[in-house]
Length: 214
Image 1 (cartoon, rainbow, N blue to C red):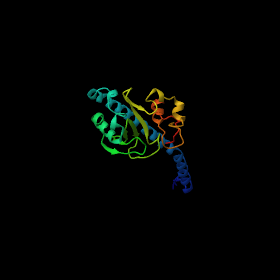
Image 2 (cartoon, one colour):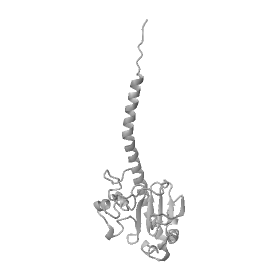
Image 3 (cartoon, rainbow, N blue to C red):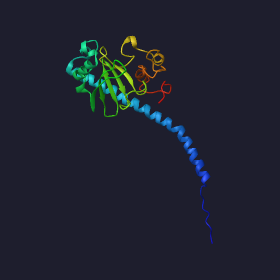
Image 4 (cartoon, one colour):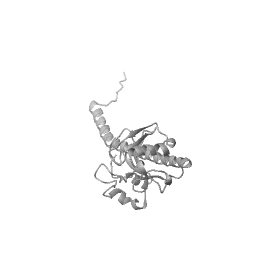
């Protein structure tokens, strides 16, 4: 009679293997998740930036150059209610949204109209400022991770990352990170207004030295 020796793993060997797999997973999964989140932020922000500026160009065909639009500094457009009126007059027709709503954000002066987009992102327009949310459901979060600042620049006739919207506020990369007032590397979770400018400055990338962890 021929005896066939069956090969197998002992319970101890299986447990050891599972333990090793668990350790490797715990080390690699957070990195992969972080990379995915960064890609979501960059992809959605770049799409938003491009779409918004395209909407401005389309609106200019009907309403004249953006430099002539009645916006911040012009009467009631410098209020949340005025921001809604401005949005309805100049932008609503040209920006594709799944819904819009009146909104007041504690990040003054960004009270106005909130736009929701089909990719899951959102943006809040108020008094020429725009606050971008890569994930619309994260209503209040960390600046530079959950929220990013932009501004409508009348002279350049386009949406610009905050900190690059005029000659006086144009920043080099070091200042975009370390500026004590609005730098992306500030310790506070709020008022990191230069983070979008930093990402754009880096070629639409969140580089390894980006100050905020994902």
